[in-house]
Length: 339
Image (cartoon, rainbow, N blue to C red; front, side, top):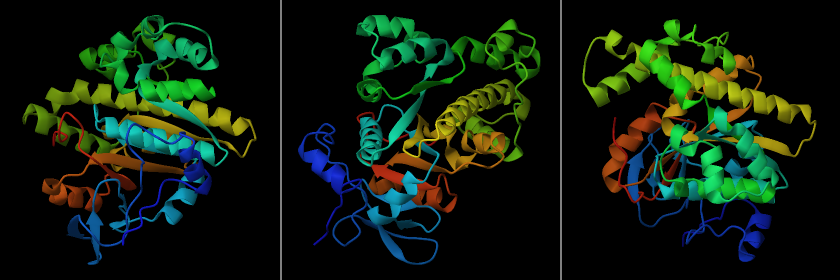
């Protein structure tokens, strides 16, 4: 019989019975390692594992990772990157459980979200610290519509959890208005715009990594059609700009956590679309560069499990789309677009 462990520890399991780890109807589980249902796959070393919902796959081995292995590894990290498929509520559920699991271990995680822009940071600080404001006032002051625009309900549980525990919560993105300037004019021309100085990006080094460039251009061409690379240059510039801005945000927060000299402070949990952590290139590599590789970090690519995606998931493991794949049920809007 397959025994399915609950993330994270005995304390977390006990907390669950008090209602602290119930996320909707989900008792979130990590991989069930035994037999039973699921689609059989072959990993790179020839052994077989099972793909199934809520399983975690270590891309270094192509095999499911056990709870006993995963929990202490996560607790050792400075930064944990969670990459989602947008509009998949199961990915929010996964993030909630991970954060609650960290708390059950006595840790004080910090949260950083792609969905907020720097021009909303002051409001985020006020909100999580307990300043009273109604929902509509919060959304207006944090400039939700201008910077993200999707349903706030998708991400409200993460914001609510941070507020409940007064955790720091960082807006990761440069303001949308500034990103648009780069997307329209390109980095070279945008550097002279006063907004670059206003938001501290004028003198930032935006690294044009050749491997990153190749990956992004391939994806742009897959989504928008083939064409000369110059056709996508400003889109590539905007992508690099955003990722560099997010990396800057994470490094600033991590340095503050380190300055506390508190072994229970952190880790910093970054929550973005999976495209910002793929192959550890967009944000994680930029963070490592800024910290001269003096950072312990791990990337977790959350993606929908479907029996028709076995080959695609195998490719993601082989190419190491992230350090781990976390397989979830398919969201209400269906499978992710391949491009």
